[in-house]
Amino acid sequence: MRKTVRLVILLLVVAVIYFGYSAWIDSVAIYNIGAVQLGSGTNWNKTLDDLIMVAGLNSKENWDTFFATYTHLTPAMIFNGGALPDGTITSSALSLGGSTNIAFINALIEAANDKAGAGTYVLNGFMAANSLLKTLLDPFKMILVGGVFAMFVPLTKQLLFGTVIGMKSYMKNRQSNVLYNYQKTISFTEGLQVKLAEGNFDAVKADYAAYSGLAFKPEFLNIMMDEICSVLIKEGDLTVFAEAAKVVTESIKEMYEKERRRSINGRGDELFFDLKRGYEYCATGSKYSIAYHKALQDKADNNLGWKIYSLEIFKFNFFLVAMFIPAIIISAFVGGLINGLVSNLTGDVRTLAVAATFFVSWVILTIIAHSLMIFRNEQYKNIKNILVKPAIIFYSLYVLTFITISAGIVGVSKVNIVAPGSSAQIWVWFSAVAYLVLSTSLIFYVIATLVDSFKQHKTLSKKLLVDGIILPMIAWTIATVSNFMALYGPDGHSLQSIFSAINGVTLVGFWIYLSISSFLINNLISPNMARELRKAVEADALKNAKAKKSTKSTKAAK
Image (cartoon, one colour):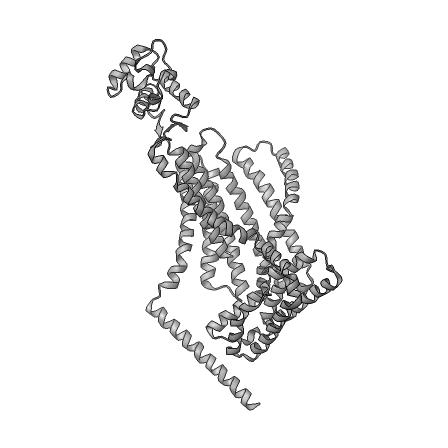
């Protein structure tokens, strides 16, 4: 799950580069005055008329003075017919080459600023829309968009359609599974269970090698085989999987019996039978996956509670989808009530209130539905007490996530992206989008750390505690406080710029640190650390040798 969050961040970076580059190359980089591009037709002619009027060039005499001042320019370069026309001169008298002549435009701006004040008019950009440089830079947009879609498609499949694709695959192979694939898998797990109980390293290793040949491999079986592989590599104790393998075998037998009855009767005996079987086959959070992890646990302690919630939290997204329409209805009612009671809300405060009303309503409804599903489950009837703490932590993190999204929307909405000339604020808008995604991803990364850690291990290691929880929460706190101070703090451009800078540096700095920290920690090994690692390996080897010798002695005695 943490890998998915990192992929989302990488996708954001590539998307910002593409969309930012495209918007920059097509707008900001083109010569423009007040976001009106050079040679852009009616708007450009109106801008030229304004410059001519402000510069006082409303008569032939004033134009003569202008050309006398800017000797590098001549009427032949600027006007239709190559000469100053009689009467009032407007942009309609300018030739196409004259109206887009950069030297003339700069001189006209300088003359206008002499009357209106320095800096009133500025020629921005560095190239013309029909320039060779623009032609050379345009193809790079296609390269970048290829990178965006190369990441977007697989990530979307993984995030949104991974379970659906797995369910579709199960439905497609249902007949062959019932005919013979179920029996092959059941025979495999029964044999594996015996070998695991004996701690037969070589036999289990051979079974793992043969596992790829099975056609029917539900996700909970894949999880067990992955964990067995890790223990095989470390030459650890395989007997801990004996009871879990028995549970996996019973789960597959139960799935087979349900499918066999369906085949005989012609229809399933449960509501949404096909969806349930497909979900049980491919989902990490299915009841069979949870049963497997429960079987690995020695006793019903807090770690079991965390492990169960780490698996059940995968269903949270389904409840988010289900609660979307009810959240809209409730937020519309609550939002109207708040608007009636507090009618003097304006600007960013109103935007925050509207966004928070919807998102908080959405997440609270989802939490209620998800928690009811878990705490009313008969499987957890006797262990509800160990589920309370992880439930509070996970749900609190989701509430923080949606509050962060609400705050991020305020920054995004500050830029009216449909207004004329709003292209000049492109980086302001992208900065707001970056804050929205990066800050929200910090909370998601904490959730992902908890899920990955307790799903695969019994405890949270110190490294994960620091890198996956403490540092992200510190970064989120700094970024959120600085963002709120920039939006609602003391007025003053310098203060807002400082808070915005703190916000950006914190978010970008954390994700850069995260992207390189694992590589450095795993590859920069000091001599002392190397000695400690060798001692640990030698100690494990000695422990395993003693265990094997004890097993052989026991068998000989029998």
